[in-house]
Length: 106
Figure (tube, rainbow, N blue to C red):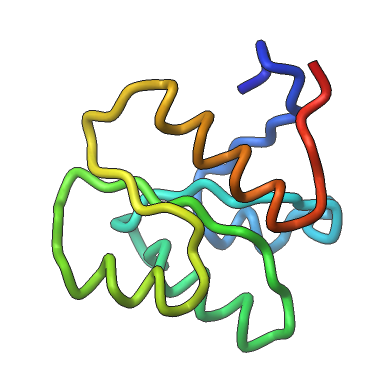
């Protein structure tokens, strides 16, 4: 993502992201569905419940239809199943940013 000109911040957990001082500057969240303590789906629900609407891209190694349906119903842009190629992620990111009124600067 950095090689495409994006500013990327990585976090060890959903909780670390929620404590981040840059939370309000977030343009898109790319998260795994399954994470310790707070899942990606729980993170999405928490943010929505607190009035924060970011485009979400979910990635998972476990293709569970109920997870996919829940994520997309809550507004996720994409739900990618590992392994996926970089082009699929880029396509999802461009779609997410377009929904948010942003574009990639190349």
